[in-house]
Image (cartoon, rainbow, N blue to C red; front, side, top):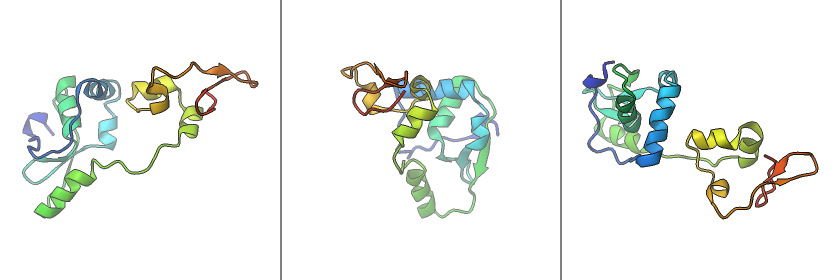
Length: 142
């Protein structure tokens, strides 16, 4: 759908600012195919129900056409619920799995907040007996 036919939701409670927004724009520029997997959700009036920040980032990235899903048969109450539920992050990250499967630098570049590694007061990783590096705070092998 042409991006200029989509209407941002004036009642969107989610905000993406500064560095996080720049990361989102960068992510869309580097991996625009992701939008096909997680399109912007709009109602019958083309008002965004889910994806307001992606929409803003798409404009910033220079996209003129974006994938959408039409949610045409929702009640006003369902729309209100969707707007919030789409932005609720449930669950916790398995930091052991993240540390073993992905590089910390990639995770940081993709915008994942890793509190133990975001703190400048944390000691540098230490060499362990297996030849790898271990986090001095949690012991996870990097």
